[in-house]
Length: 533
Image (cartoon, rainbow, N blue to C red; front, side):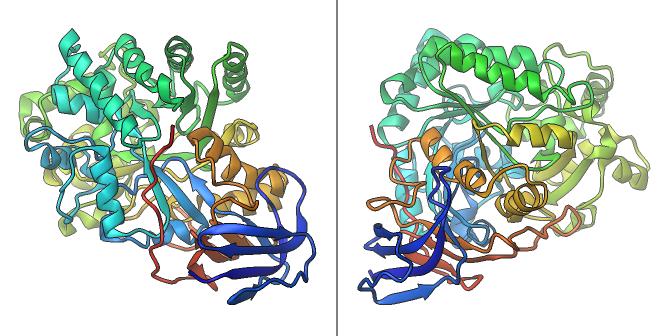
């Protein structure tokens, strides 16, 4: 592996400390020297004068959905082009391992088609370790690690059934979590608004989170509500961490819908209260006012309880469709978040479908689609999901910009993409990190450059236990990004999302260029990371 020298650099080291001018030397995948003398002479096979631009640690995306995409596109260009050098997969309760259930891989892909898509790559793995081996064999540009998904664990034992596990079944689920920890998973994730995770009781979650305690790894959650019942949902989350004695990490911190807009100060106060209780609480956030998830998320929980094939049957059955419509419009299921009715169908926009036959609906709201199809919005949802066999993702506009800014300002919150690939994707797939540097640092002066970089590097590294990443320092991994702070930005929009950022020139993973002079190199030096004890 060649030795690389990055000279004439403005070094933002990831700690939050003020930048300084200097030179960075890389060898064998490691930072070997950081000199404050700009013209320091060091031996190197490759010398790159970065022209006074920023050299910072590579950005760490702690909420990624590249789990299957990386097999079909190992370059992951939309990610590395925005400076991301490490991704944490297995989010929202939906990891791709463990998978020991007979026929489970096909059924799991069908269930998650709107979230992760389907992959042509042969599903050869069972446990987390074997999945990471498959990633290593395939090759990938950024480093990737994975959480183990609560939904995946539950699916292995209970399928999609809406039921409390027996003592024996819960023990089996706990064993799967412990096995995943032993094989290098970085923590346990859940999404308590999406089935089968939403079927779980607090007691089940606490028992599974308890398996993390010997490893010191986090319980990562999309909490049970981000809307009307957010305060009870946050309390449940913190109490799980306190009872299980584990760190907790809140996924995509936000307050959804008009009822909660403007209450970010109250939510942030709860974070500080949790830490005062002794709960290690951290969070992440995408810097946008719209979410991105699977369209089947808007269906009542009972529709999913017998697996994806039966879900599609329900969507085509007249009696079941009427029950679905009534459950949504009359909001008659206690404890269900009911996102479609809560957000308004005009704010739920189709992002991607799997078939060419329906590609014309991408970018159209459910309300507009229902008008065009001359039907009610709920029936338009049922028809589209049935035709696409659940393979539909949506963008949901329901977040307030002032709350985005307040949460982004918190020292506890790191930046993420949480982006889904395919169709007309959310612009965060291409632009979350440069958007922060352009819009919120340079234009709005909401954050200093150094603080923004800390929230993209050492903060997420700390939250996920990535001990050799996130800081420009000798002995740390040679994952770096070079960008111009005066022009870095994201042109990606909801209408035209597939636009790479401006001002990001070089990205190195393990000491190798994956982006050079603003273009991907095709290199795939990324590591399949395993958490260490």
